[in-house]
Image (cartoon, rainbow, N blue to C red; front, side, top):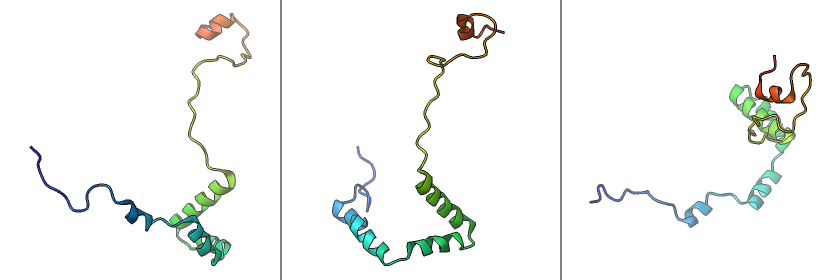
Length: 100
């Protein structure tokens, strides 16, 4: 037996409502063409609010240096790695961790 009832505003929103919120690339380009972007970035960096300055710096350095990708897992084997500095024992002992 269902409980409760229909809640106002619940469920997936219709696509025609979502489309009005999204700014198209062309519209964004038109708006930005009327603004001196460099001056706005400089103003953000000189605004005096630490949070705004930090966010602007992070954004700009990500754009300049490229955003870091996801971390890759480190292999837990020595396969394909060159062994160096082993003076005692055999390669097999080194693999097993029994070399002193």
